[in-house]
Picture 1 (cartoon, rainbow, N blue to C red):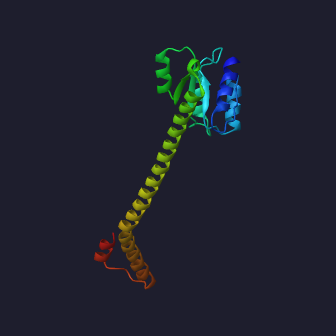
Picture 2 (picture 1 turned 180 degrees about the horizontal axis):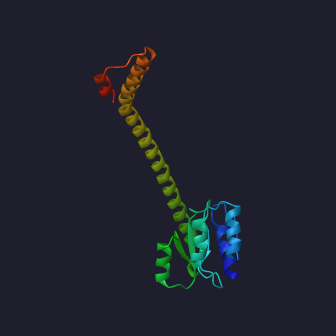
Picture 3 (picture 1 turned 120 degrees about the horizontal axis):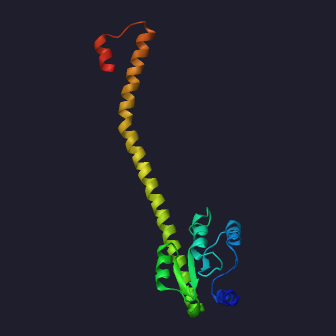
Length: 178
């Protein structure tokens, strides 16, 4: 509880508009993810019981709405190898509870939000580029296909005219149509 109250106090001191939703179980965390869209998730490494920070991160990453929300690992004493594994496993950053202050938390949150903005921007750019490629590809396909379709249309029209006049085209013309 001390850690939670300290974290809430520091979060309120940030210059950002902050709404805090503290969860005491994975079930509560999952309900919170379903109930709102979050900009950041701060996840304590030591959640108690058999629950790990990786379990909470898995919930975030698999969530249909909050799946790309940056998750920051929060811990006191932790093996540096665990920090590296956590960052490689999908956490955006790490903040040490013992060194936690407004400046450090502000920096970590800003970095995570910048990362999301860059990813969002790259997704937007990617979508724009793909859209342009599809449009250009469709135009090229249409331009390349149009003459062939026109030729097929003329051949079908010729056969229809022959049928309407009750005439059979000569075998050479039929071979050419095929």
